[in-house]
Length: 286
Image 1 (tube, rainbow, N blue to C red):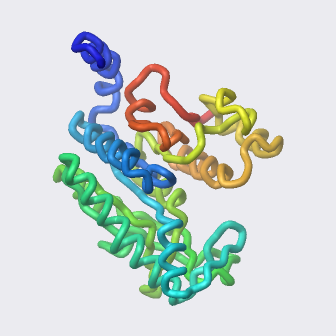
Image 2: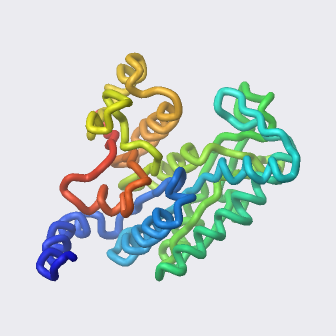
């Protein structure tokens, strides 16, 4: 049992970080085990609400790939991937939108509200939040899109009124069609458009590891100039490549700091932001 003095010490350690990030925007990409494990889900909701009440402006962007696959199986639609991207025909897009916007988004909103926050769920179609276009050169993927523009006015209006925006990665094209967009890319685009102070990506790994079989080999800080060499030598590979690319693009877009952290650890967001040690890997300019 933690003592009252130990609790006070924790608060004192957090004070410089609370002061530093007061009034700052932090974009959290919510995904992985933290979305499926009830205990982890609760800790993420609490972290985000606490951030809000100590004066930060958290913005949540979520994924939902496993839930989409499960629903497609239920309705008898085959799931196919090309280069790691889901082939999204008209029928699949309808399921994607139903799951991301109608199910997962509202579950996250309910979780934040239950934890004492005030959250508002949005898709990219609300107020033309995410203007999208079909991914160039990937026409065979159907309605898989990329971000063309983010409507920051809508997000800023919501945060200024004291609400926490929760954004689904569904965009709207000039053809008024919905587009399925990678959630990491949406999070990076939102962070860049808002010139966020931090972009935090929740994953199912301890961070970027020098030896993928040794969690203790986590690289705590990576410069943008080092990223290519890490990819070339295989330290960054597979599903970590799009995440670190998202970090690099966000940094180039004006985001101050980006973090890839282990969402399997309870209160991972608070540990990264409010403690001296931090967790995960931070990608910075340089």
